[in-house]
Image (tube, rainbow, N blue to C red; front, side, top):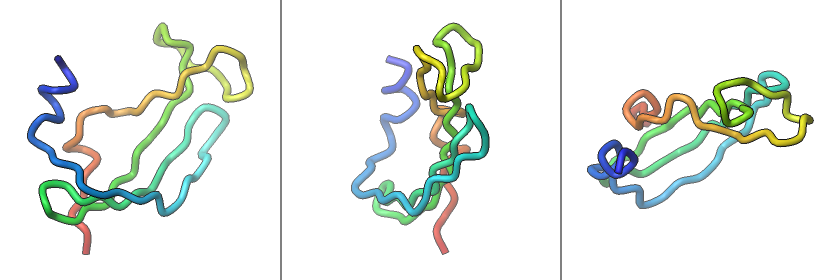
Length: 81
């Protein structure tokens, strides 16, 4: 229900990944282009490798989960030029 509440008003109709930048052993940024509610946006999506219990794991350690941070849509969206 939380995802529906956060994302329910955003209609994603297209997306593409421009590049992925590994910032460290547990942090990656995905630079993407999106069409949301018929408007173009760019976003930098930060992904953190976690242990699923609030801790951070290095990407080569077993059991890691990649989590989007922050997961709310508004900090991600920047109007495209």
